[in-house]
Amino acid sequence: MDSGISIALLGCGVVGSGVMKILKDNQNLIEGKLGFPLHVKRIMVRNLSKARPNYIPADILTDDLSTIEDDDDIKIVCELMGGVSPARDYILRLIRAGKHIVTANKEVLAKHGPELLREAAGNGVSLRFEGSVAGGIPIIKPLAECLAANRITQLMGIINGTTNYILTKMSSEGREFAEVLSEAQEMGYAERDPSADVDGQDAAYKLAILTSIAFGIEARPEDIYTEGIRGITSLDLSYARELGFAVKLLAIAKEYEGKVQARVHPALIPLNHPLASVAGVYNAVFVQGNAVGQLMFYGRGAGSLPTASAVMADLMEAADSIARARPVSALAPMVKRWNGTSCLSRIDEVVTRYYIHLLVIDRPGVLAAIARSFGNAEVSLESVIQKGRGKEPVGLVFVTHRVRERNVQQALEEIRQLPVVVKVANVIRVEGEEA
Image 1 (cartoon, helix red, strand yellow):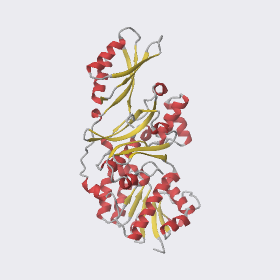
Image 2: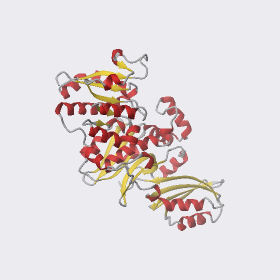
Image 3: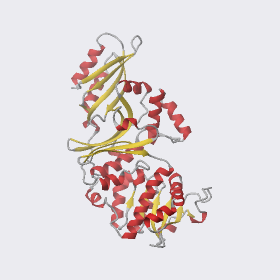
Image 4: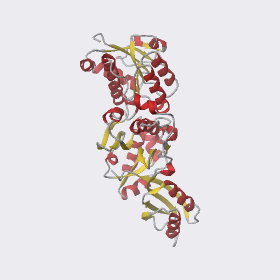
């Protein structure tokens, strides 16, 4: 291996450019740790004439996958294009051509990960994807290998930096969602079309990957309950803070009643919980195992160099495995047990506490009528706060004891019909109190 290992990249955008920069800046360090150099032989791009940084040689660019697929000298390919099409087809073609694959593509892994992992194992190559979740934070390998002897009982994370930035700004500055979103777009923290982030789909893709690894099941994104942050107001954030909570978009997977829950939604979390202090564009993943106890992984969850750092770790591990002829995938035995059947529990089976914000007409008997509806659905109330006396409508904020989701929804269906209730302004689950 003294002459090194040749690699190729598919895509040279934000992450691909970061990979090339790390290879340039840390070349001697990387070679010293591996014992041999890595050579980038080809980079596949859509536009050959696009201006690129000077550390990306023009003579290695191509727009033809076959120049990589048919080159036996190229041993590892980094897929950094994103999306499902054509990424899935390209990955399959390259696996069948005997290439080891490194990817940061959360969507293709969430939707087709089991298929791709099986194909890789069947062709004697590896598929690594540390960069697909939480950017530069190491979480895939810790779950798959470092914590392999643990029964993971809970995984809860802030794994979308855009929404965390928006909620942080709304909470600290008392501003509304639309205004902060516009600012985030101007600063480059949010896409022009922010739907995947603010509606929770980005986090759902990442949670599907984490749930599959942590709990050894095949979790599909379409089976994950997903709710975004568009309905969160500065008033809710203020009430939550008064009650001793922060509001975060959480990705949650946990064992309960013999099933695995996997859900993405805003949640109140106690201010003393480690996740409550994760601010701005930072990410964190809180993990609980029956042997190790509680762990939290924290850092930058996106960006060129943080994500490229994770890609490079996978790339170096793949290169080292080739040099030492080691087993190709720690996930292969787990994947063989997956049968494509979802075993995630439904959202109506979830048991937790709830923050419920109602707008009501201020008159005698209102609280009693609402409490009766909660009682009819066997929803026990822990506390109630009335806000905005002297004007119509007024706010009533309830916090429940632990109760099943279907009971809360039953109560709310009846409450919406009450003539004294103007609106159910918000319903937010309460999490993290067992930490």
